[in-house]
Length: 236
Image 1 (cartoon, rainbow, N blue to C red):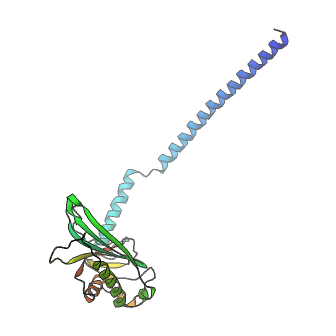
Image 2 (cartoon, rainbow, N blue to C red; image 1 turned 60 degrees about the vertical axis):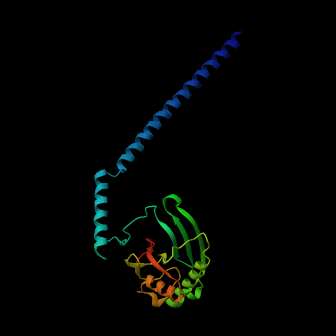
Image 3 (cartoon, helix red, strand yellow; image 1 turned 90 degrees about the vertical axis):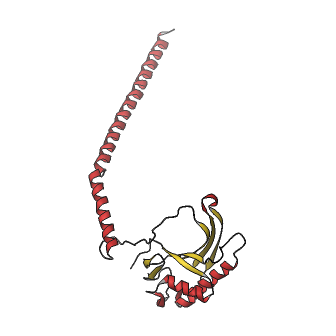
C-alpha cells in the first residue's frame, strides 16, 4: 500500500470520526434542548393550573347562585328553570304512549309501545309534519287545530302492533321548544315566540291547555300528561 493511499485512508477515517462526533454532539444538544423545552412546558402548565381550593370556591358559588335562582325569579344572575319531574323512568313502564315535538317549521309525532323490563320498546312509529307558513302568523286556534287534526290523522293509522288497554285514555308528552314559564308538570305559559312564529294571541297563554282544547275539538280522547321544555330557550 503506497503512502498516498495511506494518507487518503487516514483522512477519511478522521473525517468519519469527526462526522460521527458531530452527529453525536447534535443528538446530545437536541436532547438537552428537548428537556429544557419540556421543563418550560411543565412550568407553564403548573403556573396555569387552577388551584383546587379555587375550583371548590367556584363550585360553591355556582351552587349558591343556582339555589338563589330557583328560590325566586330574579334572585340570581343565573336563569334557572324549575323541573316538575319528580320521578325518573324505571324501565317497568308498560302501555301505549304518544309524543309531540313542536319546535320549528315542522312538528314531529311519535307513538311507542312499551313492554316493561322484559320487552322494552315493543314498537314505535314516527312522522314529521310541515307547518304551513300562514299558520305560523295566524291565531292560536288555527295553529293548534291544525296540529291536533294532523295528530288525529296519525292516531287513526294506529295498527295492530299498538294496544291501548280498554277504558284508558291516550297520553301524550308535549315538547314545546319555545320560551315558556312552566308552572307544573302539565302546564306552562308562552313568554315569546322564536323561529319565525308570531301568533300574537298566544303570548301569556297556557300552551298545554290550548293543545288540550284543540284535541277536544277534534274529538280525540287524548290529554297532555307532561310538558317538556328545551332548556336552551332564552327567556327575554
